[in-house]
Length: 103
Image 1 (cartoon, one colour):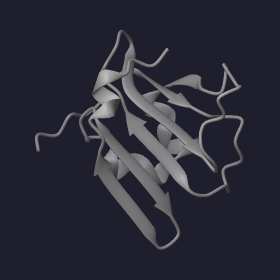
Image 2: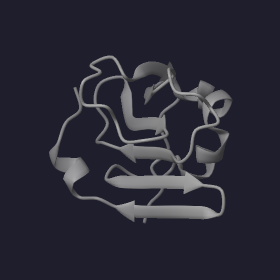
Image 3: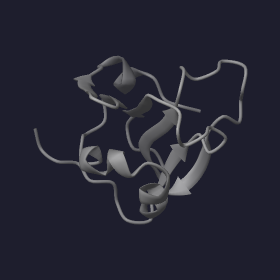
């Protein structure tokens, strides 16, 4: 697999409203679109379907402040998911992420 690092200055979707101590940490990567690098990150349960503003945009350079444990996975290309919790690591390819454009 060829590394696909997010370009400097691109944006990531982060659920800033979620407490940083919630587990697990979820991350998924859609295809790159505009200034977005495709990454969406949240903690705790699944994405609420009734919250349109669940994700805030954040420069990828600031991800280290919000989810430092995700840094080793940032080079995963679009179509990949990550689930992290204490003592648990799951990384898998999800082709459905390539068919659905966030927005």
